[in-house]
Length: 610
Image (cartoon, rainbow, N blue to C red; front, side):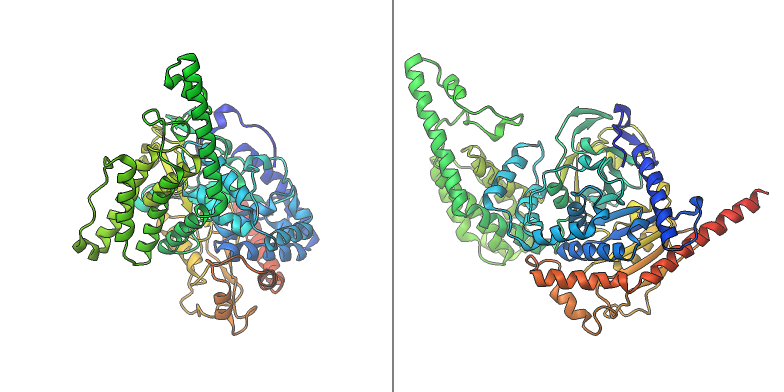
């Protein structure tokens, strides 16, 4: 990839074309593809070189390991250097992030693969490192969300590392690898069915795939107004990107249960408690010293306190002494109220009675405020039978308690815990400043221009394979190889893509799988159409690599479960690899067929000109 630095005018654009750096990469990569085809003894001229995209679906760690196993076999089959684009959703992006840590990884894939597997088999990230990372995320940006929490508390448990590199650092490191595309969706567009929900992130640009509205990746998340950058935000790191792309490993209720439990386990750990008490002790020491200085110098208390308080970050409400309460309550008192809120939400999700937590929280906050606490009225007994009303009450009550606590103490872990609970109540994920805010360009749907912020979430919630990143007309893809690691229906992603393309009038082959057995899929499907890319669809578990035990494999490798053992990783690598090794000749045949179609198309165009 070219390392050329974008001009200021190139930082944001609303035109459906490939940026200069991607064009340069494509031109270079097509030369590599041509040489690879010659080695495979597939006849092809320079103008007939096919643009081939490899897609990795979502599927948590199953997708991560499955994609790695597939790539290893593509390399052994001599086919990896035929791939122009590598695009992923959710768990597949975890694999991509690991691979692209290594410059030109495809030239030494066996070594890179061994290193990744060794890490996956190793220990999890330490609590101390996780706590430090959470603190960086909390203080390092304007918009903190559950994506930051998911990165630290969940993603690290699977990928076993904290990768603080950024995507733009890769710009000049992967001239011999496929062009990487990470995909998410715009939550507001998904919910309203307006605008373009398909969003992609690559080392150069981040933006809406079908609209053609993009911003330089290093500025994705910065604050914009009418096309001008108003406030810079640091580029997010690769750990955060993996959380942004891969956060839907189960349905919403299961995710909420897991998140509340992770929050509970994190904050109830003795190491966390000790850190909070130590910070409280340090603040108390500074306060006493400030008071002593006040007596000696007759300074106003506010000036003394300010002189002994750590400098605040730009969002200064996150740190320092509250001006209206110079002697805050103890950490233990606030901590107890916060943990009651967490446990109350867990109990509610489990269908248990929450009245005990409700009463305990009210008593605690009333004592802390000297009887001045103002919370919403308790829920009436009759209303608890209405699950919808109970859900709304607990959400409002959680936010109320957090607002009350936030005015009382400024220990960072308590403060972060309060913010996390508020994000949980409001279910805020992937919130970023909107780089299209108040743009006047009518080429962009009004839905995308109105709000100052947008929420970006796992693309698997809408389409669990990244078809629309490679179906951009300007990428001119001839062949799509879809590796499907999804749970459930093995044809859902390809049929979903076909249906959406029909609605949006995007060229895509007709997909008819009515006669196929969803419980016993084959390992190789080809869909062709007029003036559309050829699509090869490969379900992970099938009757060829699993025999009559397809369902057993599915049950063994569920999407939402603990990290895989070394044996499970090895078995999954093998079974995923078989889908490539067993179909090497079929893949070559389809590549040759696409080249022949391009040859005939060029010939027909030549005749028509005459």
